[in-house]
Image: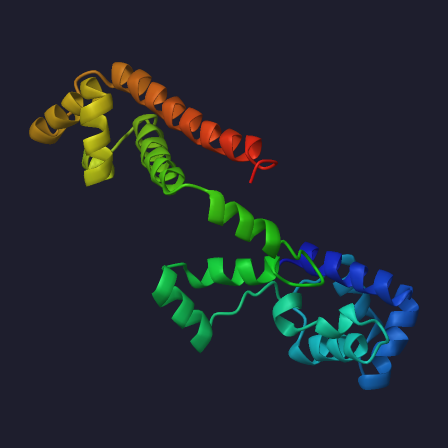
Length: 230
């Protein structure tokens, strides 16, 4: 859990409750008389040295859920903890099996769909629905290319790692069709297990890197341009 994120959320809660820090502390004491002033103030100010206890979070949730503010009645442990929970719930596991997203990504999407904090579900649905599959293909290619470039720029680069990064069937097929010079260099590196001209390869990979960035920008631009037409 990030102290700054929790602090931001608690300050938002205080704003919604119309309370200052002292009033909020007193409200917490109604449910937990032993709760200390530093415990609440450090959480609000983002100065915690350790994560708040479950009892502290439970007290904050009770204050929110018993308030007259309808939005604050949605406050939960997941919300306060930023969904940083290790156990994968059954429904999360089912979503993972169906669409292949990691637990962390599913948790982040849940947070974005939270009615109190972000509530970006409509625009996320719009974006993912209208985004072509080629976007993710080029994004994967860009990630591979960036990783290769990063390894090449190291003083002590690992040739085996570079060969492994290249080793993606779709990526290599794309290079063979569109960047034959880079493809041929890759084949040579794979056969000889060495790079003869590192500087030239870096220049070529940099061009390839910019190529995929351009393709991704063009796809996004087309999506933006078509927004008013869909």
